[in-house]
Length: 279
Ligand code: SIN
Image (cartoon, rainbow, N blue to C red; front, side, top):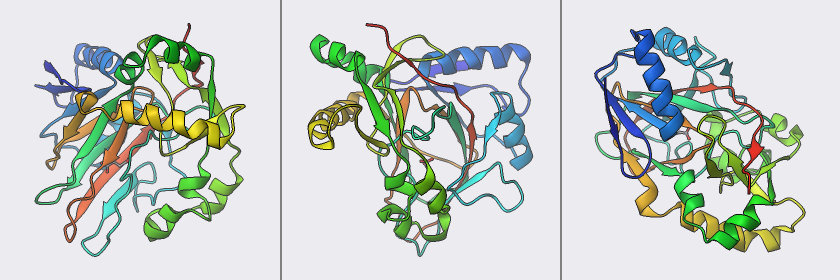
């Protein structure tokens, strides 16, 4: 097994078949995943059942409440864009499930059909985002919590829901979800490192702060996290897999392949409550 650590975030792992891992290979992949927060595999041949089996090695599966499920395997969320659809799913920076009290660990995304060009997924590094801040701002953030919500993206009044039509549903479930609070900087549950934990998709404001007071600071943090040097741009091929950790990364699917089809299968793994970074 070879591991190439990428300059922005993540590592590409070659020389393994995820459907046929030895115990030693699995342990090695666990270590890389814990340290890098994102692993890529290429040229894998796995059907839906094998995708589910691979996911179950990492934890219980979280069946997504909002994405359209695979017609035979509800554990798999469909991330599809048809040639006549204009809007893609997950097309701006976010980290999945921060609106849950125990946010999902991460997702395993398998490419089933990719456009001739475009449709890359960009990932950025939330350890580096935190480390790039000045010590004063780091200290301030270590004392803050942030409020996260599913309403903006998935609720009845969501503009996103409007444009993603029948691919995203259950708006009334999103409406009924209480906003949740997480530390603005977490101690990552696997690596023990400090990671910035706010995101443009689901973070509303800092706890105890108004939206107006929060937005300028959040915008600054988003600009820092969007630094090109922290980003890995993943070019998909059929059989490519990305497995990201939601607590260490953000991702954004590029919507630059109008008129072409892209079909991805996503399985999400349950996570845990998040602890604050120690100052
Ligand atoms: C997602 O946000 O889960 C979708 C990512 C992608 O399609 O590349």
